[in-house]
Length: 111
Image: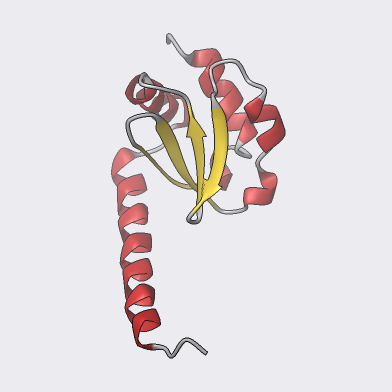
């Protein structure tokens, strides 16, 4: 595994496998939905070689690592024993709920 050390540090830094609700990625970031963000060690992750920064935004815990994120993601999923299908299904369910909530917010008065 080319990124094993980085993967191990990320898994520990996000609070372990049991703290991961789902994981997806974009071009440069690993995007976690965590069960409890308080269990993540943001300071330590930011100091980890191979991690550019950590961002908490939109209910996601995002770890920016660069253009090699697809390889890191693949190794992470294998190392942590996570299922890509389960992760995507959990993420889709959350997205549907967010869309529904946003629909109701449009109709609420702004006061």
